[in-house]
Length: 93
Image (tube, rainbow, N blue to C red; front, side, top):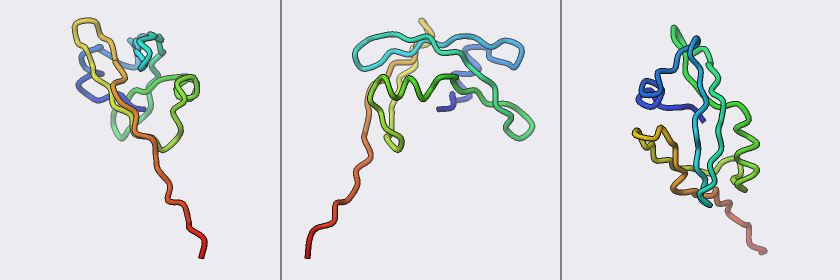
């Protein structure tokens, strides 16, 4: 997951000022995640270390679409919805 530019700007992220971001899951449990910079063209974008551990602990599989709401006042990302990837099952002929 990459943070949007608006969220990165609000958190004042730069390669020199990385900070933890609080994520709240669907069970209202809060996890602090470290931000990491990734080179993107002439600039940087920011994501989380240990992201796969967050997905696993919340039983979110690769391919799922996840929705977050950002609460600016508390600088909290709240997981609001998970849409799991559906696969078509083949029927027998």
